[in-house]
Amino acid sequence: MKSSIYGLTFEQLSQWLEEQGEKRSRAIHVWRNLYRSRVRSFNDMTEVNAATIAILDEHFVLETLTEHTRQQSQDGTVKFLFQLADGNLIETVLMRHKFGLSVCVTTQVGCNIGCSFCASGLIAKSRDLTSGEITEQLMQVQFFLDAEGNGDRVSHIVVMGIGEPFDNFEHMSSFIRTVKDHQGLAIGPRHITVSTSGLVNKFKDFTDSDLGVNLAISLHAPNNELRSRIMKINKAYPLEKLMPAIDYYLEHSNRRATIEYILLRGVNDQVEHAVELAELMQSRKTMVNVNLIPYNPVDEHSQYQRSTQEDIRAFYDTLKKHKISVSVRLEHGTDIDAACGQLRSKQLDKASNG
Ligand code: SAH
Ligand code: SF4
Image 1 (tube, rainbow, N blue to C red):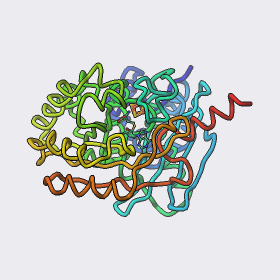
Image 2: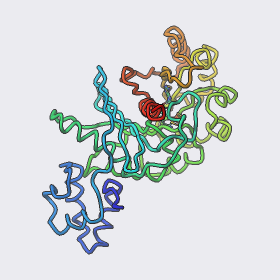
Image 3: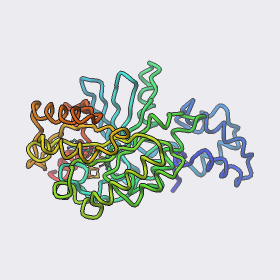
Image 4: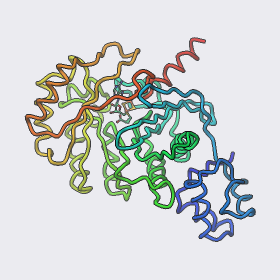
């Protein structure tokens, strides 16, 4: 089977052309046609000669994803359900902010981390996405924007769709190298955020890499007892392992990190939890921003409810009082099941119920 051209970084494309007996320097023309002109067929590559087009066509494909469903929210959020070549379904979400357009990408089909509040974790991972499939999600969204004709460009990426990016580290890294390449899409690394549930064994690789992107950590609880209850990954990587891994990142990257904290009513959203979280963050407070995430109800997880506005406010105020930088995540597309994994799990439901 031919592989996706979007799976190659610029370096790999240059190398591949050389191996085919082509000039390495041709890569830039191919690259520009892919990511600047955004052709939909190799034949449309105006900067590339016919012979090179022929060998590209012989070995690669441009599009492997097909749009299964697309939903648009009143607030402009667009949710895409894509079908992969093997029939699996994944989600990609476009969000419109004041600061630009961001896309949330999926990295795996399902997720093995199985957090108790998450729709994606309901379905075990069947496979990792290739870097080509991750990059193509972004391209498909950009094609959609190109077709709208307003000159809109995706400016930000969040790696927060279905899957655990640190469990698909190589493909995720390759995707980032491709989209940040300044001769192509040129999405600034500071506009890219990778979110992990805390796979401690990958923090060093991530920190020591040349990726230079932002990191968000799904902490969700201030102590082991509570964290293990809602995230089973905490049994393998409890706070005494996770916090030093975060500190390694903070010290060596010299970047701030985002601490994500989902608010589950009556479970982890009380003032006492906020105080405990503030204490945990105390020594790191100049280096972290806490992002409070109102729980997006998932039918299968009916044991959880969304926190009350008063509790969210009190949690926020408590962190502020302790001089912790904190924000509450704005929601996008709640009318279209835009929370991660939700549209996909509904489609699978429909399929299994006939
Ligand atoms: N696997 C990674 C990235 C994907 S999940 C991770 O867990 O960090 C992205 C974010 O969405 C995580 O912070 C996750 O905890 C959160 N999330 C999962 N289910 C949610 C729900 N039902 N409501 C709100 N946020 C949710
Ligand atoms: Fe996987 Fe993240 Fe969902 Fe947990 S929250 S099950 S790690 S996608």
